[in-house]
Amino acid sequence: MSEILGNTTIKQEQTQPIRVENRCYTVMDLQTILGIGRKSVYELLKKKEFRWFQIGHGVYRISRKSFDDWLDSQN
Image (cartoon, rainbow, N blue to C red; front, side):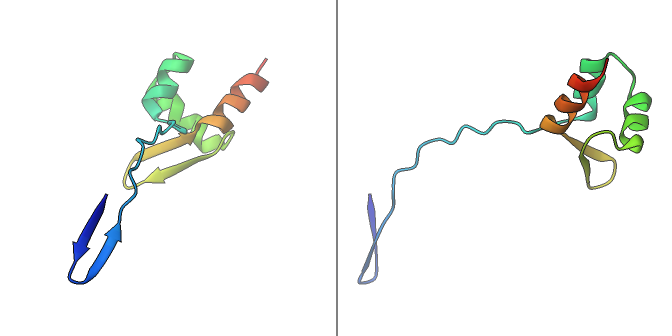
């Protein structure tokens, strides 16, 4: 597909939809996976057993890989 702007022709490539894999868990995801309450999830975050980061005020994202590795290492 191309578009003409003034005397310039710009070619635009057709893009395929990108399949985005969710690389993070939410606090609610961890509650469900572990069968624990929100307060217990926050206590785990404080222990820094796996990687996480905060987005804005009170919104946390937990690295799926880091958490899954941690969970697999638990006895």
